[in-house]
Image 1 (cartoon, rainbow, N blue to C red):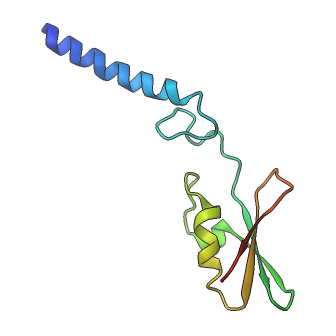
Image 2: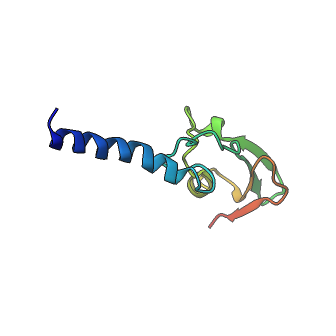
Amino acid sequence: MDTVGRKVCAVLLAVQIGVPLYQLGAPGSARFGWQMFSRSGGLPLFELQSGDGKVDTVGVADVLVLPRQEIDFAGVLPPVLCERPGVERVVIRWPGTRIPEHYRCR
């Protein structure tokens, strides 16, 4: 192998090792990091609250066929869940946290 080929291989190897090493220090799951899905805190539960006080609990698996860990469910699913008849508010409960997030439907 000539000198140019060795340099190209060295650069490609450095990128393949360097990027995940850099992302290893990132908080939470980082794209292109070795810990991409290992730090997952679990999937949230959604409470659908209607105007008459009725509360229905919906899991991510009830809405999506194949939930993926890298999707921001708290940002994506509440507007979709608000389209259900009578839903006025969506409460998001993450596993391991006591303080829920609230999303008011328009």
